Amino acid sequence: AGDASSELQAAALGELKRLSGDEASGRRVDALVALLRVGNATGDEDEKADVAATLQELARDDDESRVAIAAAGGAEVLVSLARDGNEGQKEDAVRALWNLSANDDLKVAIAAAGGIEALVSLARDGNEGQKEEAAGALWNMIE
Image (cartoon, rainbow, N blue to C red; front, top):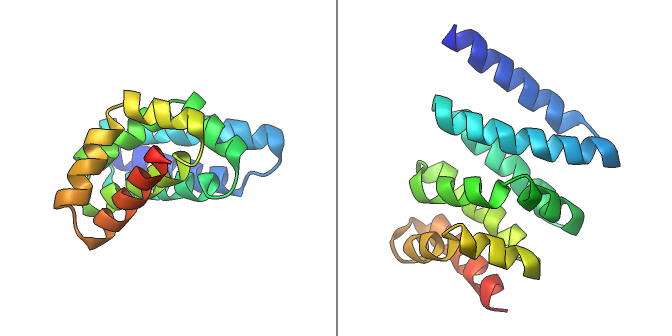
């Protein structure tokens, strides 16, 4: 049953990545954040990294997506993943947080979720990629 659930989640993630349009975009963000929460509960390591990377891509240049990610609770789950994930998950989550922190209002959401502590920890003790991504996010947080 666990394999079927993982396969279903992977298929759903693939379909969500293909959705387009404004209405689909908001639903996609909600579903991706929900998948990240479920991924945290089920422990599917590859899926968590995939979802964090997808959220990072959505937040890269689109402020509406950034706001939608935060509204869906994305800041909290990304901070959690940055703090407790494996090496790759941490880097993907921190990259997404860096993009979210480009929005002034979302800086508050990231800080409220414990993001500053997680980012400082990774900037100090993470691998080279995590340090670079965390430093960028912290830079955005103070701008």
